[in-house]
Amino acid sequence: MSIIEDNKKLLNSFKNNPPHPSYIAGFIDGDGCIFIRKILDGYQTGFSITQCRTNILQIIRYHFGGRITTSSNRNNKIINLMDTDDCYHKHNIRNQYNLIIQSNEYIILLEYLQNSFIIKEIQYQTLNEFNKLVNLTDKKEELYLKCSSLNKNCNLNKIYLTRLNIEYISGLFDAEGCIYIDKKKYTKFYISITQKNHTQILYDIVKFLGFGTIDCEIKFKIYNKTNCLKFIHLVKNYLIVKYNQAVAFEKFLETDDIKIKEQMYLICNREKHEIEVFTDLNQNDNGKEGYLETLKLKSLKEQICKEICKKQVYKEKSEKMKGEGNHNYGKSFSEETKKKMSVSIRESKGGVSDKIIIQVRKMINDGYKNVDIQNLMSLPRHTITRIKNSQIICRELKKKKKKRH
Image (tube, rainbow, N blue to C red; front, side, top):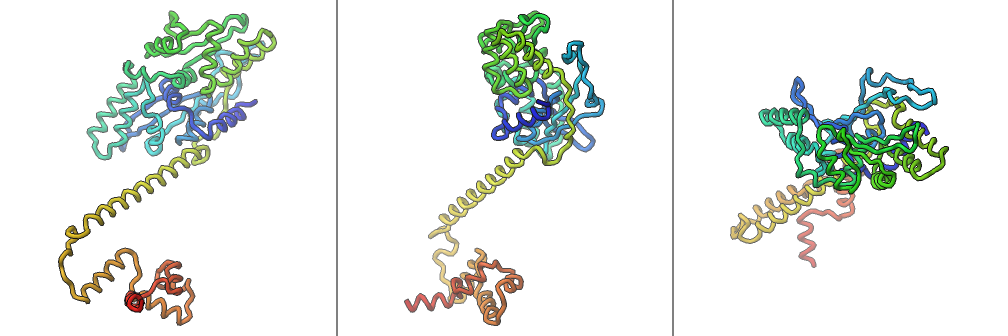
């Protein structure tokens, strides 16, 4: 299966639901950036993820927007370096691509990742606070400097290590993990996760899993076959970038057949080192349909909430205006004033005045069509129909009918 076909297959498997928030947070903690940058006319804020495989970038973009970018010196590789045994060379330089979700789009992702980060939680909070500001320039400058400082040197707050779960570990492994098989000696293999700047999280992963070790290079590693299989079983269904490697490695460990082991090694080798050439850069709305649908639903929800709040306000206002709460309570008015007040209230509520009803009825009698009356009088078509069918009649006529009854 080609990289393009595999990307489509993975994207389809995630179309109904985005990856778990802890998985995305783990991936960004490993291979992403939360930024506040200074530009000529203000600030630029957002999330960015850099990867050699675009499957993860396409899936996150589908649900949370943004754009996939690159530069000519980072995506000009098209020829793979190969070893003499037709394996991809371990120093094969692959193309790199960026998913950037900026301030005009990242609100959905910002909400989705709440309480999910461990390493970059303070950067997340800083961005969230910055997003709520409008014209407070001094505060923005303060948050910009804070975020820039954290991205250069950030100490891990142990409080957030309580968020560690298998989804987060899966995301971190997809970003900074490795499946190693020695092609000369198939009995030598291991799984590893690297986190140079925040090694404490590796020790906590050992505690959480109950297996694995931290080696002399301060890397999390699993050498034991049984524990490697345990780890793959735990993370496999959450993986995106290393999903095919995990499946192949699982088969590699479960079989004693050398030919099958060779095939699985080749799959892992190809997944790790093959160059991806991705050309669908800087797309408009293609490829982020899930995000656009979420925006529509969010807008609809906001409209419904506003209508509910408005109705509640009117209801409370109406209750307050009853009896002594009404400024006209206890006052007496002439018939002419009552009539004017009635017409005024009626028209303010979007009703139709007696004058308009009479004019519409005259036009109907003169042979005007409903569509002509609609255009001339700027009235809704259904209102004209109701006047025509005597469902809407003049106020005086209504009073006469009531008296007859």
